[in-house]
Length: 230
Image (cartoon, rainbow, N blue to C red; front, side, top):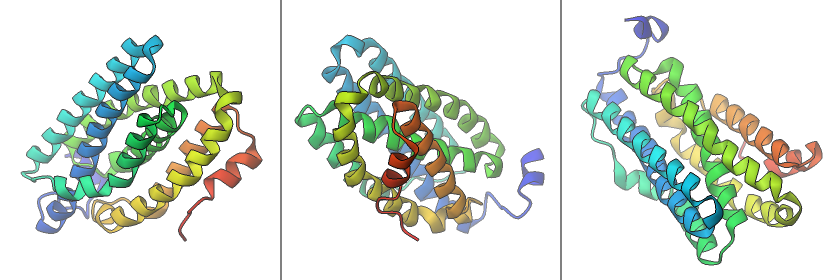
């Protein structure tokens, strides 16, 4: 029962915990479903790397099944209606960009914003997770770094032509992330995850990704500030 020693104040079977978990678990399931659909759509837009993108999509589908098992382990029914509303803005923006052939915007939304959001949430969750969910999440987060790396490498290779569109897409989509973080903050706290830690981890992951692509420190500070809620 090592995990209970790490998190002595958390009762994984309490009604309060399970209520919050129903929404947080739904968010990660929906996030993996969105990623599955988005990578399959990107595979259509980028035929040169289609096989690689289909492989990433399949990985996300496995992650979804793992998180569904986490909910079943705690006898929690995920609130999928909530999670679909939660992702609605990013979902719509990705679909609109894909319809217009805006590959750069699609990659920023999926391979940077959603992956960094997932990585930060999983990193903060692992130390406070129940034993079953911790093992699942540790496996998932290793894969997510690979997915983040795909987007970074493609955008880095196309940085000069992608830069202007990246800045516009960042301005349109980053404020959505801050709203999402605020919306989930109370439920996350019940699970032992503090909003400040989630924000900090996301900003570090996202800033590092922008740096790896080719943005300057000044650019990153300016871009990371869009829509940041106090």
